[in-house]
Length: 458
Length: 166
Image 1: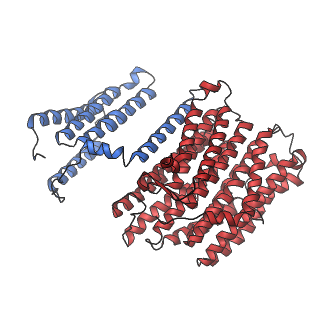
Image 2: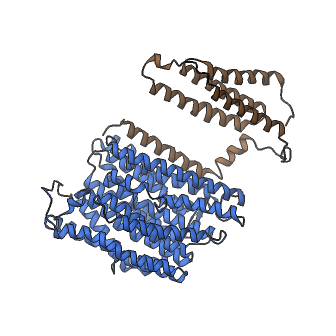
Image 3: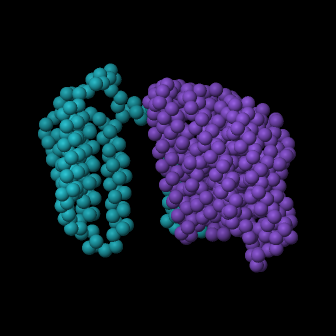
C-alpha cells in the first residue's frame, strides 16, 4: 500500500470517474448520482493527499510529491468537492450530469498528474488529460451552435499550442538525452532559448495569458456557466504549478526567459483589466478577468526567485476559489449583467456572497486575493521588478471599477423585467458558501499555507 | 543485418506499392481508391519488414493501415449521400503532375546523395521485444495516461454524437 501512496488520490479519482461512467447501471435514472460519486471521491482523495504528506517519488522519479504538490493537489481536490456538491444540488439544464461529472473527474485526474509530473513525456500527456475533457465541457450543450463553435475554437487553438509545446520538448529531450526533469540540460545560446520559449509559449496558452488569450472570451461566452466555472478555475492551479516547475528548471539555463514571462505578465494585466470594462456578459467579463489574473500569476514567476514561485502558487489558489464560486452563482442567476440587477432585494445572501468574492478578486484585506497579491508583488520587488509591481497595483485599482459595477447592479439597480431564475437549491448555495468561507480562511491563514508550498529541486 | 534484401519479395512488394499508388490516382470510385490506399500502406509495411525494421512495420500497419486508411474510408462513407457520388471524373492536371514529379526528383536525388554518417549497426539492434518490455516497465505510467486520454476522447465523441441520451 505504501508503495502506491503517492498516486493514491489519482487512483481514487480514476476509479470514481470510471464508476460514474457506468453508474446508470446501479442508480438507474438518478443521474445526479454521478455528481455525488464525484464529491465523495474527491473528498476521499483530498484526505489521502493531505495525509500522504510530501517527499514521495514513484515510477522511477516520473512522479514526485513535494510541498507544492501536496498543497496544490489537496486544494484542487477540495475545490472539486465543492464543485460536485454544487452540481449535485443544481444539476444541468440540458441534462447529462453523469457524463459531465465523469469528464470533470477525468480533467481533475489530469490536473493531479500535471501537478506531480517530473518527466517531460508524463507532463505533456497529463496536460492533454487535463484539457481534453475541457473541450467537451465547453461545448457540452450539443444542440447550441455557438457553444460548439466556441468549443471548436478552444480545441483547435489548444491543439496548436500543444504542438508548439511538444516541439519545444523535443528540442529539450534531444539536448539533454533524457526525458526526466532531473537530467534536463539546455545548450547555451539561441537553440536553448528557442526550446525554452516554445515550452513557455505552450504553457502561456494553457493559462490564457497574452498573446495567446483571444480564444478565451469567445469560448467562455458561448459555454454553459457550469463548464466555465470548472474550466476557468480548477485546471489553472495545476497549470501554474507546472509552469513554476518549468521556470525553475529552465530559467537558470536560458537567460532571457524571465524577460519573456515578465512581458507576457505586463501585457496580460493591461489587456485583461482594460478589456473587461465594457463587457455585459459575465462569462466574457470573467474571461478577461482570468486573463488579468494570469498576468498577476506570471509576475510571481517572472521574479524567478523561490519566493516568487511560492507566491504565484498561492495566488493561483486565491484566484481559483472565488472565480469558480462567482461562475457558480452566475450559473444560477443568469449570465447577463442585467440578470444581477436588484439581486440584493431578491436573494440578499447571494448578493452578499458575490460581493465578498468580488472583493477578494479586487484584493481587499483580509481576503485571499489581498494576501495573494501582497505575496506576488513583494516577490516581484525583491526580484528587481519594481515597475511591474507598481503597474500591477495600479491595475488592481482599475480592476475594482468593473468588479464593483456588478456590486452596483446587485444593490442599487431595479430589476430588468421579471427575473425568471428559479430559487437555487439549498445544496448548491451550501457549496457556494463553503467557497466564500474558504476565501476568508485562506486569506487569514495565508502564512501557514505559504510555508507548506516548497518546490524541491529536481 | 544483411546488406541486401531478397530480390523476389522486394520486386513483388515494390510492384504492389507503386501499382497500388497508381490505382489510388486512377480509379474512378473514391471508395475503391481508399481501399487501394490501404493496400499501399500494407505493401509499405512489407517493405519495412524486408529491411528488418519490425517495429516500423508494426507502426505502419497499426497507424497507417489500421487507423488512417479506416479514417479515410469512414470520412468517405459518412459524407457520400448516394452511390453515384462516389464516382469522380478522371482529372489529370498538369500542375499536380508537376508537383508529384518535383517530389519524385528531389527524393530520388536525396537518396542517391545520401551517405550514412552513423556507425553501421549497433552492437545489439533494438527489436520489438525490447521495445515492448520498456513500454510496459519504465514507460508504464505514460502509457496508461495515454490510454485515459483516448478514453476521454471516446466519451466526448459519444456525447457529441448524441448517443447515450440522457
